[in-house]
Image: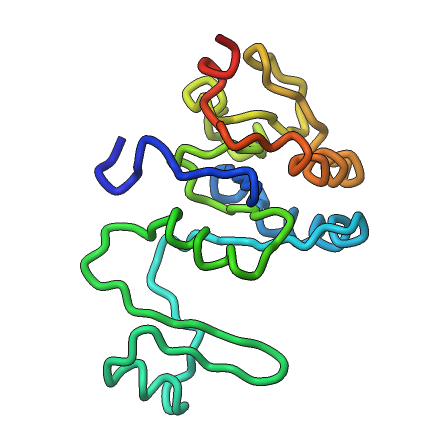
Length: 194
């Protein structure tokens, strides 16, 4: 593993986490956008942590918050009655620290944290797979994949559930049930079986 990806994350019973992993072009964000209202209807408050492969800015040049952040405020928090945004420069980091990001959302007490991207990180995952994307299925190399949602019939390793990528209700049911299946001792498939 790369030096910035730990072998273990500090999981606990209080905050269920599930990765949504797929190759670019599979439709992770589109699927999450469609699933989130269904999860809300099932009574879940869901936090989402999304990985970006490039520099991005949610602030606008010229605005006070941007000017203060550029001047060195770290973190910079902008708040109104409608929303709060925290922006922080992270120079010198090879990659975002998922464990730290999970801790940032913990005080909001979500019922579930969905993590889009961070596919190399050691956390339980739902893999989305479309053969038309032309990339290999990751489940064979990633023992953290608990289920694969695909639009094709696949041979999966023992202990990995097969889900229909086009059945939004079934996917919402599976994800909504995740917190009830969440134990503090999360481990790769091989350890869970032995």
